[in-house]
Length: 234
Ligand SMILES: Nc1ncnc2c1ncn2[C@@H]1O[C@H](COP(=O)(O)OP(=O)(O)O)[C@@H](O)[C@H]1O
Ligand SMILES: [Mg+2]
Image (cartoon, rainbow, N blue to C red; front, side, top):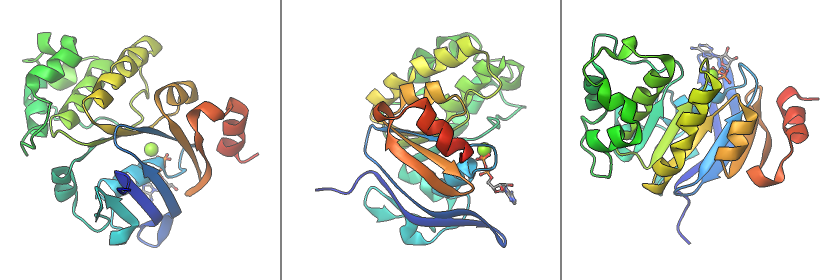
């Protein structure tokens, strides 16, 4: 049987001398969605940044499409097909919506995503394509950040707290588009504070606590009480 799309095995991650992740192991198949939850400081963003190549790791600790990528530089990881929607969106303030999207497409990886397809996914962006990205509402900016990542035609999309600070209706609107993203052949890892949203969108869930996996389960088989216990360590 072929190896899963993403295999993380005994992954440690450090900021200088400070160890932020301890022996993390997980697997994700093509077109699957994994939710990562946990309190502030648990290591969720560090996990996504490490998978995206923004932090160093043992080469074999992260395997993608059958090859080790743990020690690979971030730009090469993107070229391999992993895109990150970073915490806080990080749009280019001086660029328009469309220019931000085009930045994501610079690699010209083959695949389904194009400006037209991103505008189909988020029609409100088409109307606002020429305005500065940072003049948009928070929810629309998050759509730009997701669209920019999709423009690299990733087979794995990493989303860091896309609902943070957004109104519930906008969050529902964004999550409603996720099945379309997966249907195009993209697997996703979503870091999410909203546990209900995480369980609804994902097939499997891991809960991080102080850099370690406290719980790893199928989304359908877990209760909020199980998650609360893992989340708070009670
Ligand atoms: N740039 C950094 N330098 C040093 N320590 C960091 C840095 N970023 C995060 N940390 C630490 O690493 C741990 C995990 O942080 P992070 O991955 O951002 O957590 P989360 O995303 O779950 O809130 C925390 O203890 C945090 O203080
Ligand atoms: Mg974070």
